[in-house]
Length: 220
Image (cartoon, rainbow, N blue to C red; front, side, top):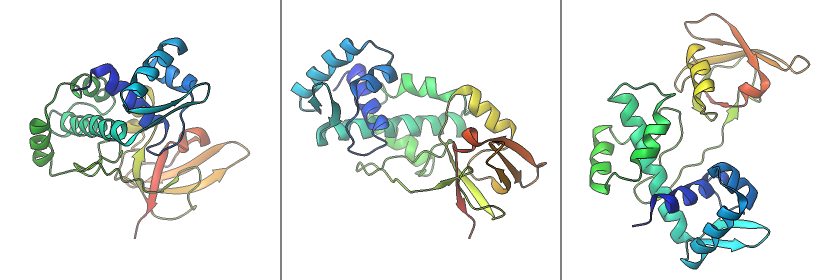
């Protein structure tokens, strides 16, 4: 079994590559893992020697099929655990990330499958992030954001991509959670603001930068 450090590196590469096969610069990887570049480079050489990544010196890294399989497995564990913590243990969605980070390295596949079944095989976690399938498939639907979506159309929030505790608490206080019905009333590019209305709430406004973190789909 790979160590938690190995799993963290592989998951970080998968995240920084947005689930794809893009080359991830070493500086970005080091920043994401809060380590100095030299430490990240040393680890990358070891992962490359184990066949888990391709390391191109002075350019970056990308996952091999073997590395991607491990990374998707960790991501699946993380997002199912987050869902369990929110849906069953009723923890706040802004506090479950740290707990899931701890548990994702310890939970067995058998327990994970039982949690998945208990939860009804969810397609996404509480933040709307897609959960990789047991076979290693990661859905990657393309959605508009509140910064780019049509104005005065019935929409549904599907995902919140900024997941710091501060932003999630802000989003929750404003009703900006996956599943909420929403309509962008006005987008003011000069002021850099988006005015919106959520069913059952008063109209509100947020910045274009914040709006870019809220993914939506049209209600059919």
